[in-house]
Amino acid sequence: MLTALAPSTAEAAAPVMPALPDSLLDRMRPLIARDLAPHVGKIDQEGIYPEAALRSFGAAGAFAAHTGAVPDLNAAIAAMSLAGEHCLSTAFCMWCQDALGWYLAQSDNPAPRAALLDAVAAGRRLGGTGLSNPMKCFFGIEPLKLRAKRVEGGYEVSGGLPWVSNLGENHLFGAVFEMADDPAHRVMAIIDCSREDIVLRQATHFLGLEGTRTVAVTFRKAFIPDSMVIADPVEGFIKRIRAGFILLQAGMAFGLIEGCIRLMRGCEKGLGHINKYLPEQPGHFEEALAALRETVQGLAATPFETDPGYWRAVIESRLAAGEWSLKAAQAAMLHAGASGYIQGAPAQRRMRESYFVAIVTPATKQLRKMLADIDGK
Ligand SMILES: Cc1cc2nc3c(=O)[nH]c(=O)nc-3n(C[C@H](O)[C@H](O)[C@H](O)COP(=O)(O)OP(=O)(O)OC[C@H]3O[C@@H](n4cnc5c(N)ncnc54)[C@H](O)[C@@H]3O)c2cc1C
Image (cartoon, rainbow, N blue to C red; front, side, top):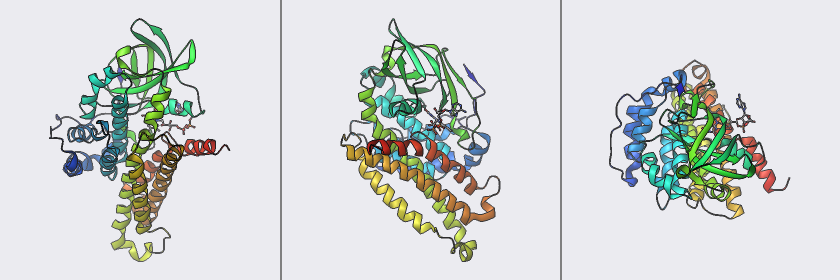
């Protein structure tokens, strides 16, 4: 049952477009201009869920590239970044969808992949990921919030997750639960929000990212059939997907930083004579963004690498993505001046959005703990 969820922009059926991987970004541009750019203010201020954009991006192939036999994470990141230049809510929803597809594509159990992957990769079924809590649990920050007992044909799961995004009545998301009689035994599954024993509730309003359909999810002794199990036990699976999970988030940061650079450049004509005294200029961010893109591009080419140095580089790149997002948004505010401080101005929206890149799991503080743990500090 769903109560008081954010409205949707998707009144019309999504167009069906041929999926040609080499021209994904070319196909995305007109869709962004039509389905996203005109709605960015409403998504932020009224919490409108950008469903039409997500569906059309899915039909264009934005959620498919990283789910094939040879996963192309860089294509997924580039598509997310293009949307993120306009709107972080939408880029985050795209990441949620990408993470869901990533879990299905990598599933230890072929059943959920066979049943759901095509629809998720094409954006016909939307959804996300409730892995913030497990990602904190696996790195020693908090206990798991979901408990299960074994029943005939599956699991009965109880508990709740405070915030899961990109959800709706017919949506899906990945979750991890532990066995009540053996907490060290953890299982991951895909959860179908259409079940009556899965209750979604819009419990909170946020500073930004209001259009992401972020809801509290309660599992009321929810039955999760074996056919929806992704990994049992979950540990090896998490090790396999964790680099991709983190690297895909770079698309949010790249888009946000690019959007902030554009805002700074847009101020040059009228305010360049005074903005030139600011220590951080758009060129500074263009250089940093190019370097970050190059690093992530290299790392995302080999998401299953097991070398500890690789994992460390993934964590460092994610930390840098969050920190550069904050810096770029602050600089955009300073360049825009009072015009950026007006309600509805893009600069203040980008500033609010930038904090999300730094606090969504793995948050800056978690990333710093992970590095400290690696260094034995
Ligand atoms: C807009 C938005 C969307 C999100 N979408 C998702 C998602 O799709 N999937 C997902 O798994 N996580 C989601 N999260 C959670 C997010 O990834 C982080 O876990 C969260 O921002 C807290 O991370 P932290 O490391 O700073 O923990 P801290 O802020 O240090 O919090 C510690 C713990 O307390 C919980 N907590 C803190 N405040 C509250 C509160 N008011 N109510 C309930 N619990 C609270 C946190 O969830 C966390 O488990 C979302 C958060 C936000 C703000």
